[in-house]
Image 1 (tube, one colour):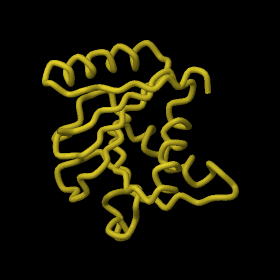
Image 2 (cartoon, helix red, strand yellow):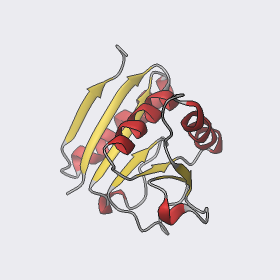
Image 3 (cartoon, helix red, strand yellow):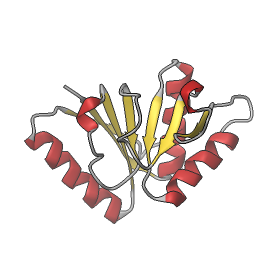
Image 4 (tube, one colour):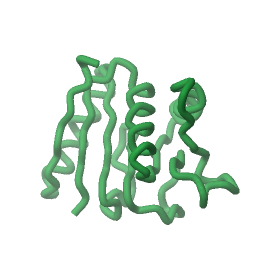
Length: 140
């Protein structure tokens, strides 16, 4: 069963996501980033290029010719992606087919619309028997 993790209270959702992606890359864990909003996807892409002057996090869009050899992929469609280990959800919806992934990482900002949508997703997961684990980012 998919493990569900909610990282909530992020002052800057994209920065928090990039910090988590950097950590995953450092541990050699591939990640698929689900971002249906093109500005969020572009923000993650941009920040991963500039996140840390001392480290580079290899990433690209899932439709890139380099996707097969890149550990961090950014996409707005999950149906055609073969990776099924870790999914990071940066949308306000339930990712389609999320249950095929070993882990689902939800990143939630402090905006009320983001928090409300996250509460709905938590209820959805819990109603279906998924254990949800929480990590508070509001102090970071």
